[in-house]
Image (cartoon, rainbow, N blue to C red; front, side, top):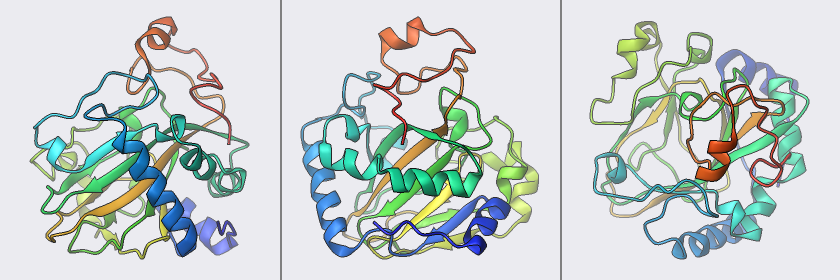
Length: 262
């Protein structure tokens, strides 16, 4: 895994809330991670969250046809864990956001199936069980991602306009702009990627993806990270029922079993 950052890349991320990063993984690493992801999701059936997390089951909604989504694979697959909890990747997160330490929030495989629905514009962090201006996600291409099969698109600088209001990912692709009209005044940027390339984005950066207009899958592995010391905001998200019920708003989310340090 290549984990070197330049000062220009760090400055670009802090300004725009996004960074395109080429060659995070070499081709052997791509093959290793892709095989591990496929192995992990093959054991889960329709259950979306691995490792005794929240009981969320894939259905037939519009959202379920946006992508095949499976979360917390690091809890059931050591190879996925090796990549997503790599300390050098954690060091990159700290450099990008000027934070002392990060914990895993959740990973997720995101597979746009052939002719899968587009992903409407949205923010990530408002879905999660903590609020932060410094959450970071890495999105790693395991197949080539192009404008034809649903590569990621971002609105640069939108993390500076966002609060914690959000929309569901539904059929109205532009619903987010009803909440944040100013975001629609900035031209989006598409991030085509080769396998092994990645992007980093802030949890409040607006992003989406087009439909998969091809006959083949577009497969990616992602992971969201929260700054160490983040506190519970009352939302369950992927937390298991027992843990969720034990928390009070304001509790620090420092359970090393569910949210290990990277």
